Length: 263
Ligand SMILES: [Zn+2]
Image (cartoon, rainbow, N blue to C red; front, side, top):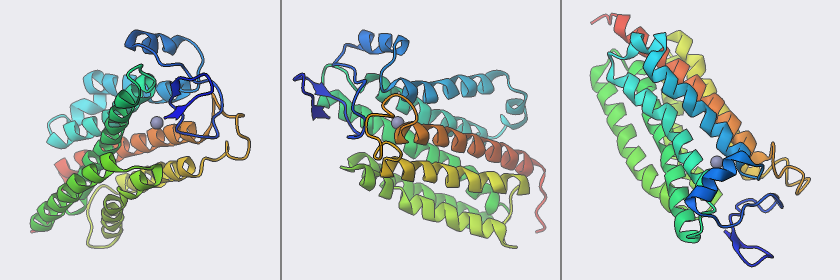
């Protein structure tokens, strides 16, 4: 949040985005802002449209009928929707007239969505990777849930973009360890899902780094106010990462229903 030249508080979280800010608005006016151009419209639509896809997937996609017997399918569904729901709420209402009070609560909600996708999404991968060692499987899932609880506290209390990203580091480290086990002779899981597991994190983390670096707008301040600034790019890459997570989880859930462990 920053004081604007016009005297009202504007939601400027990127100092290289110079124009296109909405004034402080009511809930209704924030919703009406869906129908004209401003510097949050791309952020709202880029995470709003995937909600429509995943909502449809939950009800009538053929894939869903193949995996809906498993509790992991519901976890995956929550993981797919959460970051987009939190993000749309944050970007649509961040300029609400209650000012900083609303802004920082919405930012926490956005962080909860980012946390949910990383927490719920990874559990299917861990479940499949340690599938035939039930003790190790339960231990890894428990450790990941405990670490995730600590991560949630850190993420919602972080005071900068950099600290918010760092709060997810331990989760990323456990997912990297899981990927290495999966690639080794000790690991299990659908081979088709392994590449999606890797791409999910590689693409999403790359998007986070681009957002942190404020590229390309730091080189041309004001030229990317409406489209393709670092936050816009991160949104696109996050959604691509979620699709990879979804494809990987579906593959692993179907694989787990058919795989016989040699006991
Ligand atoms: Zn965002």
